[in-house]
Amino acid sequence: MFGTSGIRGPVGEEVTAETALYVGRALGVETDRVVVGRDPRASGTVLADALAAGLRELGTDVVDIGVAATPTIARNVGWLGADAGVSVTASHNPPEDNGLKLWQPSGQAYDAAGQDRITDRVEAGEYELRAWDGLGDRTSADGSERHVEALVDAAGGAGSIALDIAVDLGNGAGGVSVEALIEAGSRVETLNAQPDGRFPGRPSEPTAENCTALATLVAEGEYDLGIAHDGDADRMRAVAGDGTFLSGDALLALFAADAAESGERVAVPVDTSLAVEDFLADRGVDVTRTPVGDVHVAAAATAPDVAFGGEPSGAWIWPDETLCPDGPLAAIRIATMAVDEPLEDRLSAIPSYPIRRASIQVERKSEIVAGVESRVLDAYESVETLDGVRVDAGEGWFLIRASGTQPLVRVTAEARAESRADELLSAAKTLVEEAIVGK
Image (cartoon, rainbow, N blue to C red; front, top):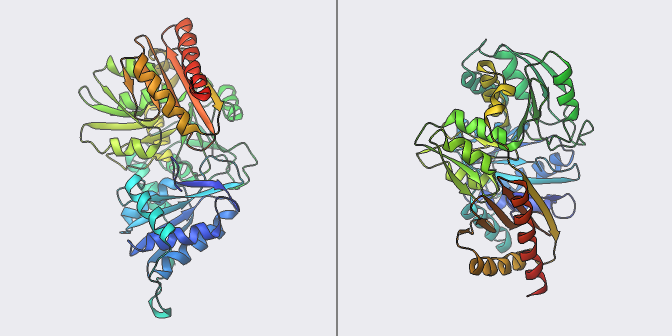
């Protein structure tokens, strides 16, 4: 029922009002008060209403904060004294999708145990529904104001970020970034700022390919920085003042080095570049690998010596602030760094290594990866099985893992030399092909 980032899929097929109703009832078993919000997708109103109905049938009060960034929803769980929160969102997915993501008061997403509890209750379908006079209430609240205040505080207060910044909201719910940057002293120009769940301005995911307009605007204008969000603003990507779109690994390296001191650790997924590890090692900072998914990164970030957690896809977690990926907070942090030194100057210190990726379509992805694992354990010494199979091959590595959302096995290889990266990708693909034919 739950994937790597909550429940997500096509509306009317995998995600329906019935889905939301049953999740609401299942969540209502263990809660008295729940914060609910959504991204701008038109289907969000239907799902939010069904979710709220399920919660209220169990006597749970619902605080509806309307269209809001996912980190705004997640952080308001604790701020409003609620037991849980639900974002009705499909994040960076296309308009036809929607979903549900559950949050704890700490800001951390529901982990595997929490997701299993909800799934078991939905499958059992046994609830003690309340009578007419025992239903929960549904009230409205503005969750954005408190979030903006927290962001300005994180920036160092009003007037602390005197920059010219272009912000591409991708027609999503990340307007709190704009408000916070303005209050912190920046001049801000926006792109695709009108919330629209059809995402007419650009595809929702803030990749280099999708953000060419932002990069061009920054390169040709008088801007110090560009910021891009996805539909629910849990992700943030950045453009340096010279128009360079920062890779996810480069952004991860910069954030981690800024957040962690020597002797501390940062949490990163298993597909993170060697460049991040090398860059941080020079600064005395260690890397802890996690399975792919911000839920796993957040779990690792609860350790007292982990100062930061991030995914190259654009999810960034500062555990001293919150355990949810907070794209607007990331916008504030990268802007604060740009005040001290332009991002284009910072990038020169980060190494860049050749990385290769491939996707192989399969019908039984979990079985295939299990078959790969047995072969890898026989052939290689340094193997991790946190999420798929990751092999450390000395001057490089490769990772074979099942996609969390599609019938694909994803293969990634990286090395410090081009030829070695090609060799490792070829070896990894061969392992997958052998597992497919059962050799």
